[in-house]
Length: 268
DNA sequence: AGGTCGACCTGGCAGC
DNA sequence: TGCTGCCAGGTCGACC
Image 1 (cartoon, rainbow, N blue to C red):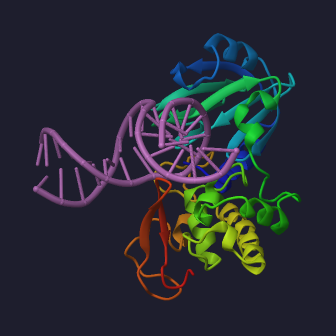
Image 2 (cartoon, rainbow, N blue to C red; image 1 turned 30 degrees about the horizontal axis):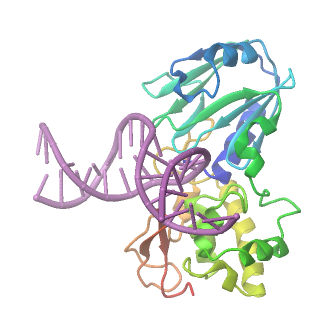
């Protein structure tokens, strides 16, 4: 479900709404999503104060005052909703000492939650590439990564060991803005094209955050609201509609088992 | 070793 | 209405 901009929106909301709250109870309605025994998860959460909330890639990290971390990966359909009514997709209910509640809802049950003492206990974090807004994510680093692969550029953008946080929606949008065909081999990109791509990765993600992310079906922010960026999508989920730049029809192809949307006329 | 594919799970929607 | 098949924002492991 959510990519970097959606998770960043949730993290910013939670940073305010959870500030110095204390987990007074955790009700596990569905143990399937927990990466540890439910009693261990509850024991390490209950009674703990929230220190701060951060993000790594598409994962939400709630720093507990106990120096442990509650790591939440929403994967496809996970939602964290403040207040609201429990429904059939509510998998956990977090109760705070001031009486407020935070629901974890997840239609497809792909989400993962765990409490760890150190972040490197989460295997996923150890293979994750740099954050796109970090200093280390540079055109030079991209060029070095591209040199080593024969894959098309779309597949490389989706590879979280290359850069963290980009998913299918933003991979398509970034390539559209960069006027690059998703089928181009990454290693064939020129220095100038890589620089352009680098700029658009950052610009598109920042713009999406400014619009509180994109809501296709399930994404909601911490207040249960939809994101507004999907109104600005140029190609994603727009097969057969006119390209906003040239008017030719948007095409859909499959790459590495995922849908790619692009304009065959102005993405070269 | 790099790259692709299917599995994971649930539900919405189109087509018949 | 009810069935079938396809599709979905991600990640992981099996396999070539």
